[in-house]
Length: 369
Image 1 (tube, rainbow, N blue to C red):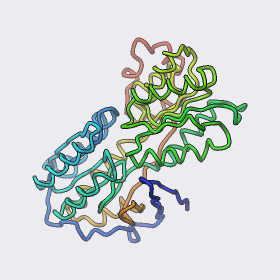
Image 2: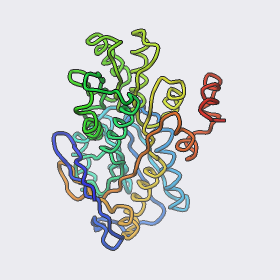
Image 3: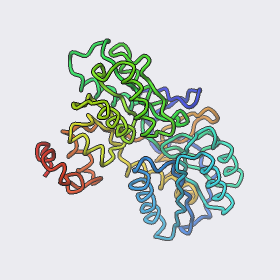
Image 4: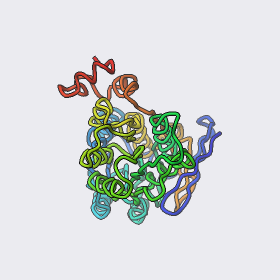
């Protein structure tokens, strides 16, 4: 059994993978409301509009699954905070005031939202933390093995550098937002692979709000420090920022891109991979994550304890609460040769969406037709 150190803010949360059956599943369901039927309202709070996945995948998948589980009687109140912690707090407070039955929360700032999570708990509204583990009395959590994401990114980056990689190779680190607990986990996982193999000292940036424009500025700063010809690779924690990385390198006159990582399997990232502008992305099967969150939410308020426990056989600790019932979904590295067997095979994108006119030749070379 593997134990993974997960970091939130300045604290450490411990992930305990429970390899047991449903009868031994952890997590209390005592706060479930067995009187709820199918006529429920699920509040869905997403953190930003920079990452297209929330609008294109997570929310639509949740909405569809909630409709399926409630015989099309369940309603979804969807809000996106556009990277503002204050906006998200107000959105969540409105949901509490309107007495939604359950909230699925992907927090902008895991620490700042804790007080509002407490208010939801006091109002008898369960909160399912989605993708990012918010602080406060969370009822359940669904996400990916975030340290593993960082490890996969770094291992694939090293593969891209080839067998001659050594400690003199300089790798720029474009990490995620310091207010996102996942960002620290990605960074920790990546550094566990990169430490002692390449140089990242003085080249690591924590990027506010995962903002691609800030990422572009950070890479421009790094280029000014070490020169464009001395960049062996760029670790970018997600695809949106990878787009900013590519812009900065092109502006500096780089014509052949070094290995650049990403995450989220955004459509433009898949196209950059085909064009040789980005080396890889991490594909996180959003249908699995989003459907699990929808199921947790519905089962929790309907008092379906056995089904809820079956979904939450892992546990995690946050800085404020321990043994939070959880589910962690596995991830896949996507390089050019893996596009067809991942995002295409899973129906995330059709070949026609990927292989627009500008990418026809690259698609043919990659066997996408």
